[in-house]
Image (cartoon, rainbow, N blue to C red):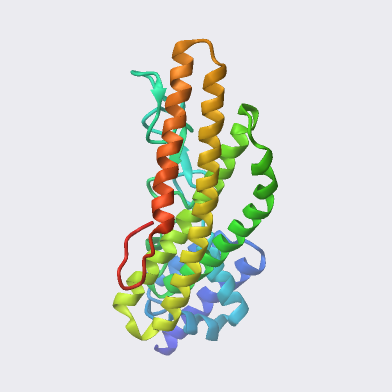
Length: 276
């Protein structure tokens, strides 16, 4: 780079560093993007190394985290009101549970796929591998935390009163699964475009896929329990229409559980891929 470009890069990265130190990560990411738009640094595979030379390793990793955890502009924590049932969980015309959202009233955001974070296209291409790795680690940690809190809870959530907590657990797992799927997509993209980085892509793929399967196993258990709760609830209802709705809800949960069971037993690889 020219001396003038170096000077501009230093100015931009100094401002970015100041925001990161102050804990204003999203603002730091926006400032960095503005600088990149003015060509202060080349957006290539050397970008992370260039940032580390200017900012140091810790702040460079903090910037990666800022992009990795940058919230989606169009939803709240990965979900939005289901457009098919308008958040009611039932289709007005038929008064049956909504198949799009499983009668939950919320469906994954169409923009972020349910991760609750901006898409990778928002970030500079040169940082996307590092961002994918960071998101995978964040999701893995969150799945472990969910496992710790849900194991005992699942054992006693066998009533309609506990259905709301089961639904929340399912949506929490689904959000992390979306991040892991995104990381798997990045691994496959890098595998094709940068075969020399095979060690990185294999590690990203293995850690993300294992965490994804673990999340799906737990989600499968939650769906089975939700189906069981709905089936038992249906038996207690005297109103035929209400009973039919509850039975239909149980069937939706059963069908989705079967879908997860098939995905869990599928063994994709970096060489022959099918989305989970």
